[in-house]
Image 1 (cartoon, rainbow over the protein chains, first blue to last red):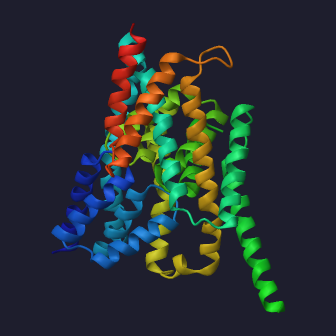
Image 2: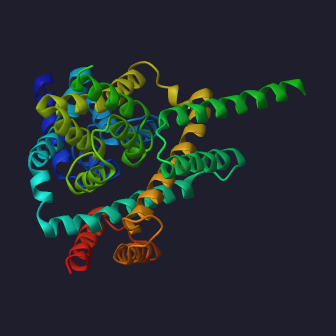
Amino acid sequence: MGKTLKIKALFFTFMKIGLFTFGGGYAMIPIIEDICVDKKKWISHDEMMEITVIAEATPGPIAINCATFVGYKQAGTAGAGAATLGVVLPSFCIIFAISMCLDRFLEITWVANAFRGIKIAVGILILNAAVNMVKKMPKKPMPVFILVFSCLVMVLANIFSLRFSTVALMVAAAGFSLAVYGVKRLAGRGR
Amino acid sequence: MSVIWQLFLGFFRVGCFAFGGAYGAIPLIRDVVLSHGWLDDETLTYFIAVSESTPGPIMVNLATYIGSAQGGFWGAAMATAAVTLPSFTLILIIIAMMKNAVENQYVKTMLGGVKPCIAGIILATGGYMTVKGCAAAEPFSLDVRGAVITAVLAGALLACGKRKKKMSPIVLILLSACLGICLYGM
């Protein structure tokens, strides 16, 4: 296959993935695996495992991480660009269209009532995601300490409507983790 | 600074620090949006629900919507580009030249600190939003209808979890919408 053809195939395949997967990045992984590993044989099973590990360790939408990775493996930087653009484009168009009319839509009484219920569902979904994350976490003193501390800081900030940067909190947690690691290594060397 | 630039910088920051998928990004997006006064908490929550129920990455959906509400088409395009750019660049760098970055001891240690911190932030955000859903307009009083909806939704989710089934977010959102119409409509 010529390179232009490959890039076209990447773009349209990832557009399809972007258009038909509901529920965000985690829902996309099995579909990307099905299409890119089993059907198209663009990447191997091992590479799919590798990308899942990298996606966990890097920030940003997981779907973007996967699209960039598969696109690069197939057709270099241009392929990565085509696959990423493909996966973003459908949601961009759909949401842009919705954003034009959501305000007027919310003025309808029954829609507003429906959204009062939906508001609660969103809270529960976020809480559920957090509980799943906590379950998967190693139960060692340091992660548990960081978890409880950051949770408390956030709860207090929400209650007293304080605005402070969550990014600062994350950087502090990373620094703390590094410091503990450094101290442990020094102590190990001293012995 | 023009709104388009603020959108770009705000969502670039979200893209750089959103570990752990869309739910990790929601507290960050809340941070950016509320500090600029772009949306209120209520509208943002509505839009999180819309992003869950439409196809595509949730973070991209949120960026597009907030960008569009603040700066029209170019606002939407800038915010979306900004939220995807960090992960796009980072993945290219990692596969092209730093294959072992993910295995690096220091990177692992840093992530070991960041991940529980995110879990804590999401826990607090989800808890706060759920409690707020049950609270009435006056402080320290309970909205009974909100509490009923919370109980039904949590029950449904737990029942699914017990049978080792996964409940799709869309099903939960549809259920909550029906409950909202039934209970608040009266």
